[in-house]
Length: 454
Image (cartoon, rainbow, N blue to C red):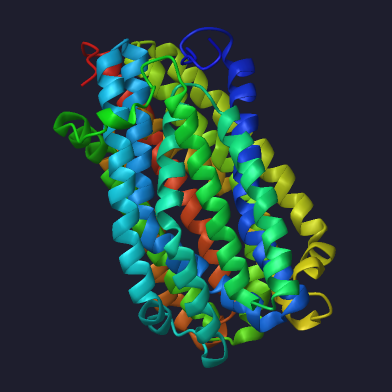
């Protein structure tokens, strides 16, 4: 059957990795189009302050939700290990534990996001001319966060089973709906940022319904039966063992971005607008690279479960080479086409566009370093180790950036956007080198002991 789990432990690796990754890249790009459509529509019909308002929410939203997104990673890795080891009952229990966990996560996030939006934005130093619109956007966005959690958990299960095409199809449908509703709510009903937030929420509900339906229709161990949903303690523990450190890593990673966003906010709404537009462009490069991180997790996970360690090392070489090429090419294109691309978001605002060009130069050009770092994180996590990459990332990315901001960036002659953006490339390269060494050590250690999947 077409919806049976795909075996990632057999066949030519290069071909399988490329065909597995392409739908993830396209899916990630579609996800980004949700936010991009928001920025483009409000930029053209509501002005640069509205662009700044939407852009100001990105870092804080990621900070709040990343802990729970990490749990979806844990669910995916647990499913991949079970499929690789041929443990169908463990896979079934993981699936029926993951979906209730997504519902609970969504409920918690709704309360935190809706009631804490203005407080979080105030703590970030969001300017007075922006904070009202940003608060409205965040509150509506978090009303639909449960649907987002269901999609992320469901998509993680599908990808662990080798299905990367279905999430792409689901987000294509949801993305089209999002763009159409953006135009209707903003142009026809004059709803400004509230309209784009509502459009995003509705599209998230559509993608969640589609991914749950796909799990229900499966014929293998990943099949979801709603009446059998319950929390299985052993599977929940395993999801938390892998997913909680991943979530903490993502949240702490986001903290450094929140601090950087707060520093950007101090330069005013024009700089915030240019920064938000450039960040959106970079997002397409990032999603294209991050797809290889997801690929490395699931290929490593299934092959680790099957005890095929040689395929894991080959997966490392292919994914690192591919992400380097992808990041270098796309990052270069984004920088070269920076002015016309930024003009789509903030037409006619030359000052904001200049800010965006600066960001693309210092962050987008060396973005391949971030891709290399993310792939090594995925390789380590695919082996079932989640605390180690968390610790390394906290020290190498979060710690280094925070130290940079509160030391070098505070020196008057270095208190510039260029100096602020430089912290990204330095933290990426440092963390990548450490994680690569750790992965090779772990792989060697695993080869020297009996292979056991928990």
